[in-house]
Image (cartoon, rainbow, N blue to C red):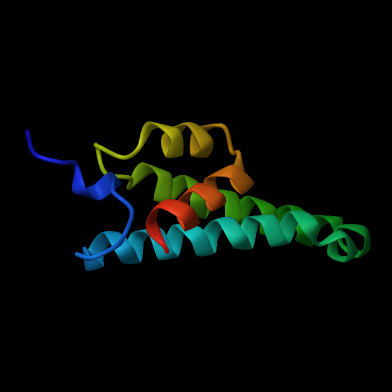
Length: 97
């Protein structure tokens, strides 16, 4: 039985394309969380805040659709439920060490 290397933590042998995917996914998650936390923008310009939230969410959704078919079920779960902090923590711990 062959190991599922895409779901193994990144250590030893690297897969550049997938490593880059998870870097981009982590950036998108961080961006969305930063927009959520931007209370100043929300208070001063709610329309701009909402626009940024939508853009960040759309980026995550696009990346979610590009997940490999054998992606870890927990990551799929976190992304489908928009559990952004959990998804980011999972990606950082599992793929970006």
